[in-house]
Figure 1: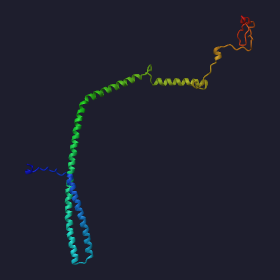
Figure 2: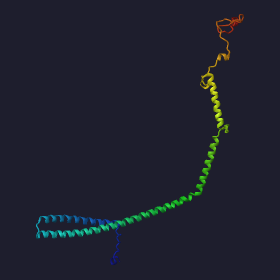
Figure 3: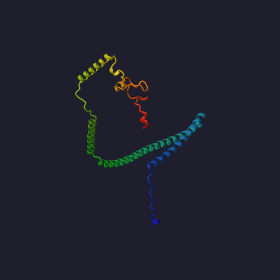
Figure 4: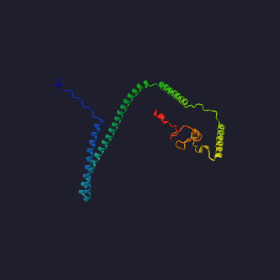
Length: 237
């Protein structure tokens, strides 16, 4: 059967926009090279026309130059046509890339929308409002606690400006009296050292070794420290 009907050939995939654009660009480069070669040939004919005198020889050179110029115009027309085709393919390519970007954007937005819907199911605006109200209540309670802890005790609140001025005048009068008596305010006077001997009323030390104070001539003898001496007989016992 294969020998009779043959084998079905697989169709080649259609060329892409990029493949067509690359092929046209190569053709355009080939046309540009031909135009450059014709320009060089026209320059040579121009120099020959300048060097030859008017006559059949010059006319022959002009004819060859005219033929080359016609070829150049033809190639330039082909080049312009290829440039237009390339421009059209670029527009199609840009449009195709834009559609692909739009498709990717739509796919990403759909995925994000689905994920956002799933997240919104776990977050409710009522819960947020309730939490905010609870936070406000807690802050109010905290402020009341701080105010209660910072309250002062036994501090009179009924002091007005007249009481303040009266207290200041009394302090100024007291300071004036102290200044008049001593010449120096009391809070600037040096502290007086107390007389410890007068406060304790201690007896005076003996003036001599074994000497008895007046009025105590028959008193018990004392040793060098002013204490009653112990009899030697007692020491022997």
